[in-house]
Image (cartoon, rainbow, N blue to C red; front, side):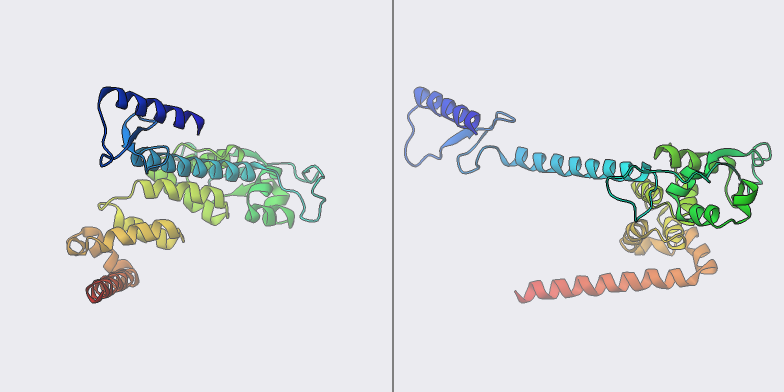
Length: 277
C-alpha cells in the first residue's frame, strides 16, 4: 500500500509540474502493475489488472486443490479407528500380485503378459480391489487378477496411475482409463480423465461423448456434451452419429430433446420476465 501511494504521489507531482490542472479535471494515478493511468477512484490498480489478478488467484486455487487431491490419493490406507497421530501402515498379509488383461484380443503379443503390482497399493487405491483381496476371493488365493475388457496398454497405464497419480493421455486412453476407474471406483483417476475429455469436446464428437458419458456416469462430461448438442439442434438430425444413436439407444435421443425443450422454455421465460421489467 505504501508503494502504491508513493507511485501515485510521484505521478501526481510530475503532472502538476508540466501543466495546470483545474478542479473539473479528474485526478489520475498510475497502476503499479501495468504502469498505465487509471482514475483515482479505482483504488490501487486498474480494472484490467484487477480482473487478471482475480483470474490468476482462482487458477492457483484450482492447482492447489488438485495437488491436495493428488496427495490424498497417494496416501496409503490406514484403518478408520486408528489414532490420528499413528503412522499409516500396510497389513502384513498383503503381498505381491499380478494383473492380466484377459479381455484384450487386439494385441495378441501382449494381452497375456502379467503386470506386477503390490496388493497393498491396490487395496489403498480401490475399494473394489480391497474387497477382492481382503475377502479371500480367488484372486487373493491365486495371486492373479484378470481384468476383462481392457487392453494391455490401458491396464499398464491404469496400474502406473495407481502408483504415481499420473498418466499420459490421448482421447482413446482417457476413455479406456475412465472405464477402468469407474469399474474399480478410482475416483481421482475418473475425474482426471473426465476433465481431459471435456477439454477435447467439440461438435464433431459431442454425440458420441454424450453416449459415452451416460454409459459410464461421467456427469460433468455429460452436461458439457448435452449443452453443446442442444446449442446446435438444427444440425443434429443430419449427423450419422445421431441416426446410429437413434437406432441403438432411442432413450438418449428422447433425453436430448427433453433437455432442448427445457432450455427453450427457460429462455422464453427469461425473455418474458425481462420484457415485464
